[in-house]
Length: 410
Image (cartoon, helix red, strand yellow):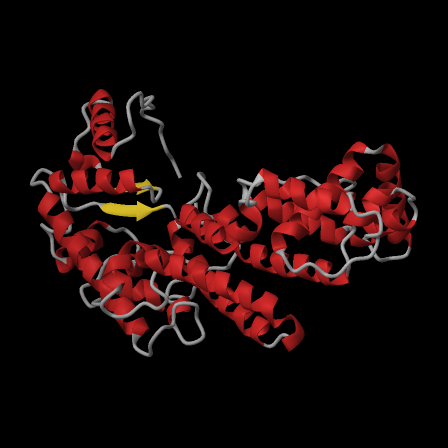
């Protein structure tokens, strides 16, 4: 896929939608006097000023695709689900009070399970800092890793020897922190068993708290791969966007079903998680409906056409058991959508044909066949166009087998 950087302007004023629009027009004019007719689509995030920017453009050019950044939408959903527990700790004062509660209580070597996610994450961050900045703890972590490698608890090729501290504004860094801590759970416990320092012992997580971290990891993992795959420059992502969105829906709802079956003794904690996951689903539904209906297909036409034109996918996910199989006749409706777009494209190409160029508009299929056949000095007539072929190209395309999964479409 080819792309070209044509302009980058610093926004020196308030970032209003109108100001962004005017700057955008200036960039178009500077680059060989580009016009609105040269614009096929605009990809942008979901900020309100961008909404005004798009509305202003639509007054000048009604026919272009407004594509919201799917990766940004996914980020908003994650923020909605986890912000009250991980991403935005309530305040520095609360963190200090929480830490002091343990430091000032000398008898608090063993304590009751704390199902407050904020507190568990704070404790994990404190443990990581105690390992990172105290040489004895670092040494014991390394010893623990080697010990559990020898015992087969940790894979022999595992090469991580430190736990990354997260940045609370980047949820993927919190995921990496939690995942690495879970991977190194036994070496961390090994430190607590072989150290006399009470401060480290105060922050060590008990079994239930490790279980909480594992549940958080399960939530995070739903979003990691889609976020990575949909932030690429060198390949097309529109063919994957809807598929990842509805995969996220399915996995979140599956987690809710699992959480509802948890024991009554810990149901309060899981009810909180269910509530936050539902809030994330509600946020996602704001941008992508939970199910596609016949009346909604046209609104997601660009995504759907990109899926169909992926040689590996075609109608696969619109058939029974597919991710996008929302009603029994959806495959036929999708085929009709492709037919409509194909027909519109043919009409547009005919309109743009010029009299100076030989085109399929000026010669019927029989004339092309006769011309080719008369010029041929071989009997390989099957390579020429014959008038008995009546199937449209899109029908032939859909009827062909899908391509192997690993094919390089570019």
